[in-house]
Length: 582
Image (cartoon, rainbow, N blue to C red; front, side, top):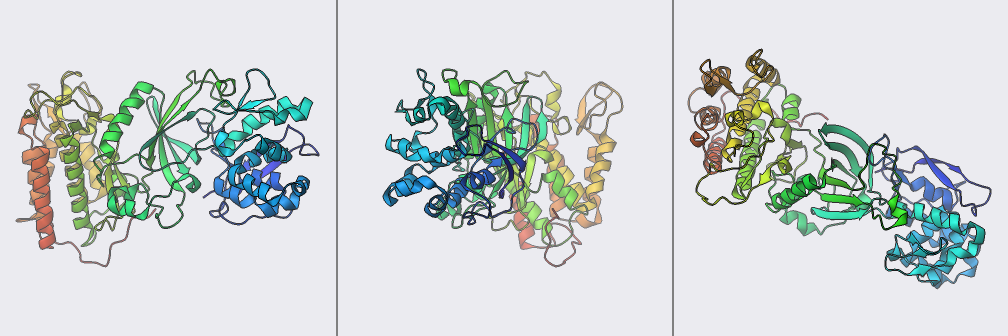
């Protein structure tokens, strides 16, 4: 959690100056400052104390870099009856009951006034009926020294400042957004706010850029995470990867998040609809988004028509985001790299097989709602190191980027599993041979069966020969000529222009089956046979469907649980496995 930032305060000799400004020198904060007691530190008055608690979303130059927010927990710590009484000359004119009402109903309003240098206006505004629920205010279209609530109620106390009223109104309108960051229920809700609203994210940095879509990593401040009853998590274990860092019985902790930005509304709406449907599946191995967000400018509103953002290249006025939990272990590809020697002990193989079974089950659930993933690859299988699952001692693998897939309309002939859609969203290395056809040709759900076969092949290579063997396997398949140089697909064109499984893939699977550790009736041999005979099959109709795959993988897992030597011969029986570093 961020701690109090070091601020330099440029202000006039009296707080009545309306040109007070705050500039952040450092966004680094200690983990407990927002919830610790900070009553009147030496040399700091209310203005300084509140300023020291403001958190900047930066650093860097990105969509959020100009936003800042003041966490409600920090506000509660600073704005108390004792601190205000000790520092405010006008406090003696208020009855105790009056200030208690202000603390209960208008604490945010008071904090904004303090940051404007005019905390003494709180009682006049409060008597006019201004409360926290009336925020955000806008400037009256008729009078520049009058503020108006969203319901149209006018507040005229600023006019008492006469010549300074107009400037004070503008300062209030600027500072009010500090206390208006939205809360997150963590249930996939849609949050739509005006563009001036800050999101309570900090330590934001860009990590990837997929064409027009950009992904940022950040931290969601715990003060904005709505506390959920403890039985909610026990009934929804699939939320373990969403709320790894917080327990419902304790105050939530700050949560690392991924922020996916969409510049296009149509693409965002499709993604949002897909994610809503996928979230309903309630599956522990399918990614569940935290929320979708829409920041918009109301051009009818003078205050919000000009967004206080330095984004010179942006012509649009709407901003769309999907918020996901951040996978602290990276992806399946990262997991293989973190365990470079493959199966190292007696517990890791069974856990890996359990995870494979879970991923296959998740894919089966997707297919039940007529959804093809279309871009399965190790990088799209996220690795969360923590897990609430009973068999998740190493964590959990979760299928992600499902939003790029399409939830299809049910075909007229529901029995024809080969009817699909024309979605093109596949990584060349793991794409099925039918991707070689027309770009608009429909693809079935068995397209995913080929991709999962590729992933299982690499899993077997890693488990027996380690991480470096994956690079060697990839290099052997790399094309050096032809129409697609550098392509590393699992299939190949013959001289007669026929499509076949790549010879190096076939050779590698045979090598796996003949390895002395797989000799006889072993689980790894069964997996290799499943890949050769049922998954990496050129004709989609010859591939196993999701139900058959799920049955076969579960059968292998059950035998491995009953007989420790079934999965693989020669697994060293060492002490309890350690999680990968990092």
